[in-house]
Amino acid sequence: MSQGVTIGQASKASGIKAPTIRYYEQIQLLPSPPRSEGNRRLYDADDLRRLRFIRHARELGFEIEPIRELLALAGDPSRPCLSADSIARSHLADIDHKIARLTALRTEVARMTECAQDSAANCRVIEVLGDHSGCLHDRH
Image (cartoon, rainbow, N blue to C red; front, side, top):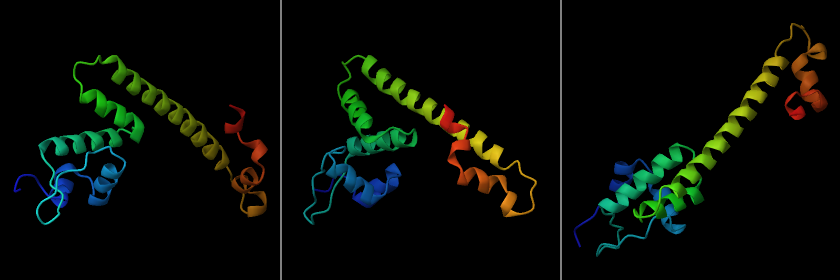
């Protein structure tokens, strides 16, 4: 069996490290490929497309289960786009929530650093970290 590429070549072509590719096989995000006579994994063009899809989805912050669902949708082109859109919208809502949380944390840390004291005894950073009740982000 001479067709297909090795895991090292698949790693280079997809931008995903070999241990991660093995992990994706283990959790069945990627089907286990056939093996060469020397028992080396051999990945075909479909596997490489799937790996690139997974890498791109991970770069966009999608978790494993939504990626699994999106791969299933991609594998059945006759299904409506509504399901994929719903998954993406849910992810977008998660991103918006994270941005709001990070914005609140940024505001809090910026407020902590508005300190012109010369000693730790009067330092706003130390004071705020020592008394969590004064944090703005807990009030949201």
